[in-house]
Image (tube, rainbow, N blue to C red; front, side, top):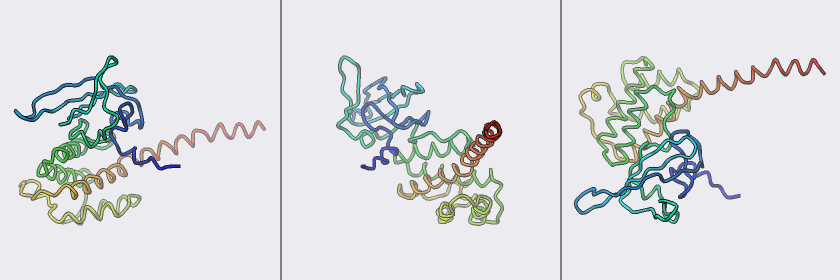
Length: 236
């Protein structure tokens, strides 16, 4: 069978199905609830699209410099012949999937802002938000150490289940010091480095704040089934 797992990384799969950034459901139907055209500049038009999830009813916003929809009696629809993710240059939420609410709000907001800046190619803003998010993580975790590298290593040692390669990526950020964050005297990173750092940071946050809770819930569910299982065996 062909491997279609790459579709899980897309925002829009086609003109009827997408991966909802709110309820985190993959391959769920959506409705193109609104379309508007406005002038980005005096010579450059832009189209605004509102996509509403048919499951949770939340609405996301998408901007494109291309007219990627058609309209008929049944209402507007995206053009199924287009690669919508390539045609749309900005979306809110900017992430394919909203970060889990179990991740501290300050980190979620900084990463969301960084991803939004990156999508618009505002590399200085994206770099600043990414650095600040990493710095805030060390603060929230009360990481110990006299320098950045030692604080990242301290967090790594306290979370041995997290892949060490993630922390190795963060340790390669040579200009990450709290002084630079507060002085705002950093250089911008290029987009490839930003994508690497953001994806790594998202993975670390998921492993620290989400995975342990999910594991605990699974264990609790199994334990709750044990008494009923014993009763069934006794009855036999």
